[in-house]
Amino acid sequence: MRILLAEDQRDLNRLLTKRLRDEKYSVDSCFNGQEALDYLDGAQYDAVIMDIMMPKMSGLEALKIIRARKNYVPVLLLTAMDSIEDRVRGLDAGADDYLVKPFAFEELMARIRVMLRKPVAVQTNVYTVGDLEVHVDTMKVKRGGKDIPLSAKEFALLRYMVQNAGIVLSRERLEQHIWNYDYSGGSNVIDVYIRYLRKKIDDGFDNKLIHTIRGAGYVIKEGES
Image (tube, rainbow, N blue to C red; front, top):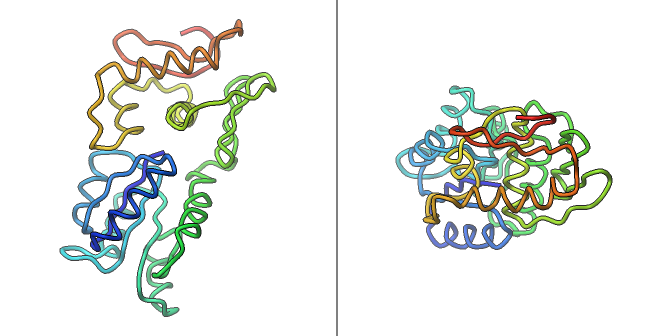
């Protein structure tokens, strides 16, 4: 899962980025609201963590623009301001949650899990494609009732594919969503991870779910490609 962090306090930004990556999230970080908008223009994120008081453009101003653009990515606001009026202002602007500094990292992680539990327009925590089940909140995967252990990157890739089941996803789109901008891996990294997933998801089953669309990318669906 990919997270955008916008926080102008560089020490805190660096600390949160490291801790989030330790928790197996892909993280891009920036230092003001305008940079956050630029990142959101260039990639899809599962969640945004954004400080309110930032230079150039505040988090509140950036949030209003994000929502005006019909982007409903979950947004958690960070702030040192803890008045009821400040919280209401942030929530009215379209924030999904609000966390007052200083905070415990464990609480931040819990709030992120809640935000990610039910993506926009999805009414369940479980995606299904045929007899495949992908449990978003617990990161558990089953096929035919059998548990399938996946690495964090494998799960992130599979989750994104089942979230877009039936849609052909290019290698570039998959790579952009799963890895942050600092990543400099080989051009075949997606092919490698697709092979890993096929071995775990499709091997031993007559009905293959992961299909290659020649010259276009990959799609997860029931039936032949």
